[in-house]
Length: 62
Image 1 (cartoon, rainbow, N blue to C red):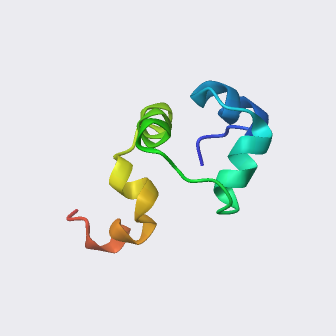
Image 2 (cartoon, rainbow, N blue to C red):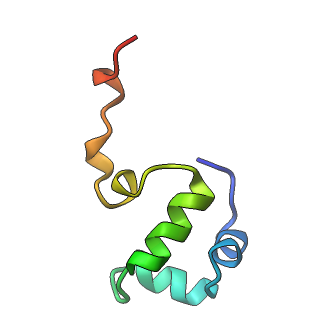
C-alpha cells in the first residue's frame, strides 16, 4: 500500500530480499527489532502489522 517494491522495502528495513521472503512465508521469525523497523518505515503501529484484523476501517468514527 505504501508503494515499496520488495527489494526496496527489504533495503529500507536493513535485511535481504530472501530474508524478507522467508519472514513472509513464515520460515523466519519476525523479531521485535524488525517489527519496530517495519512499523517505522510504514508509519503504522506495530499492532497493525502483527494483527491486521485489529484495524477495522468501518469501526473508525467519522
